[in-house]
Amino acid sequence: MTDVVIVGAGPRAVMLVERLLARRTRDAHPPLRITLIDPFPPGGGRIWRHEQSALLKLNSMARDVTVFTDDSCLIAGPVRSGPSLIEWAERVRDGRLPDVSIDDPALADEVRELRGDGFPTRRLQSAYLDWFWRRTVAIAPPGVEVQWHQGSAEWVDDTAEGWEVALSDGTRLPADLVVYALGHTGRAPENTTLDVIATAAAAGFTYLEPSFTADADLSRLAPGADVIVRGMGLAAVDAVVLLTQGRGGRFSRTSAGHLVYTPSGAEPRLHLGSRRGVPYRSKVASQLQGDAPAREVLTPAAVAALLDRPGTVDFVDDVWPLIARELVWGHYRELFTGHPERVTTTWEAFRETLRQVDGDTDALRRAVREVVHDPLDRFDVPRLDRPLGDETFVDADAVHDRVRRHVADDLLLRTSQDHSASQALFLTILGAFLALADIPPERWSARSRAVDLPITWHAFFSYVASGPPAHRLEELLALADTGVVRFLGPDLSVRLDEQRGFVATTSRAPGEVVADALVDAWLPAAGAAASDNPALRELATRHGREVHVADDAYTGSLGRIEVDPDGRVIGRDGAAHATMFALGPFTAGPEAGAFTRPQSNALSLRHTDRVAEAVTAAASAVASARSAARVRVASR
Image 1 (cartoon, rainbow, N blue to C red):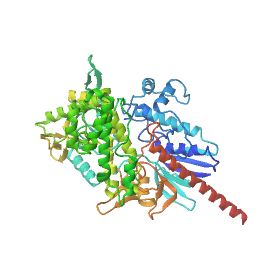
Image 2: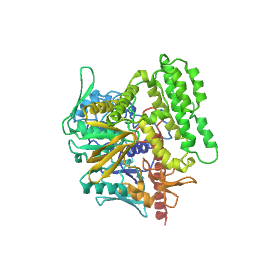
Image 3: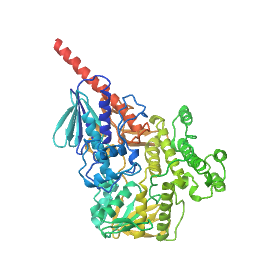
Image 4: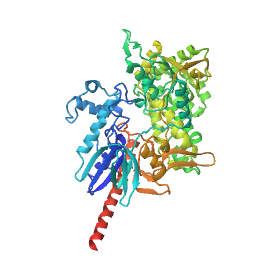
């Protein structure tokens, strides 16, 4: 029996198990025992566990979520298709999945009402992932055992026979192969954060450091208290939900269809601000009605030309200009071909204009004003990225009102079929994200790998393409109308005054906001060696290493574990471990996420299948070596 121990049991771990078992349907393999280690049940793991607020939702539509391979996947392993989240829900409500029993009345109601363009709760996603886990185990082929050990891995020791995984409960599990599939982890507070925590606590103020919102102790924020929320992404939206609806407030609609909020009285007063000063762009509800998307700037030929050049590829200098121009082309292609009544020339003519302006934003704006009359139809990347530009305001009310108008405009752009260019923009930036995977990691400049790609580009992509459902922003407007939420604007600065509390200011308007509490509403930064997970810290400092990059212009660490293309952990000596693997967001491998959109040849599925191929080969090699050793002993 060959033992594979997987540290982690979230979506990526279970997807790996599915890929391992799928491969065993093709060829005969030696007996295999797979053990997943996680304190949370397999499938959902910690992030997607059932035990969290029923108010928290995915920011993906039900039709856009799957954990199964399909015929679009260019993979070496066999395709084993299955239902997307909405297809699973439809089968559950039709009684076609007898192995699914939902006892929670609210969850049962959600299954009955869910549609493909709806945004499911994380608890429903947890049920889907639990079914995926149970289905995967139930159809395991002969010769395979799959089990879950509830607990936390503390460290891994190498032994004469392979590995031994030590758990916090004292258990020691022998392993021939170890796979780290931990998903997202927290981060141990560092010096600056520790100082703020200690100083705030000593002065009687409250500071909530970056964390996963479902795990944050929001009970520390008192009803009626002023709370500064720094950050306006998904973590901030979740915090607002839990501090309003989660405390008994209610949304309802007037007879005219206007959303209003009725406070419970238990809410704090939330003051939201960030660098941009506006929330992430909402998810898009429209459908394309013009020409199909096509890469015309960041083309395969353009990428190949970059790779053919000597030296490194720099994201800011070489790639970002291509992405920015591609986004412009994607928006205007849909506007001109899908809504010719909204422009005064043809797409064929405007294509020539785009070629002439060639990334000159001022020239683009002048040309667009001549042929696109509605300002909401006009588009350029600086305005997308910083919608408030360099505007200044006379007072806090003016800032609040300006951000509110922006959110209302964004909702119109993202939900109206008349503005389906927003859908084209989404598909274009998604295509750009996938195109970057064609550039090998080692070809990027050091700063590109350490800063531009994982931080700047990832944040911009998330802001444009991975924001909240539109109804969350509509709720934000209703909260702003009620006074529960106030918008602080862009270029937010916060300092701690030990006498008064947290003080928020912006260079765009006079005045300040003073609050007893500050919430830093974003996810913990990457950093394997600084993770709050002991097994990951040990991996980074003992068995493996974080990737360090250096060139003439930049030196730094990625904060991610070095792996080879097949997921093998690179040891401290620079050699790949034959029987130790890692995949997920803590590695320097492909940034692929876990579950993904159906029919998209998803990078996550391709990479997971590739790692499964390598793990399968390593397991077979271990079994063969063990068999050969037994033969040698018997022949003596």
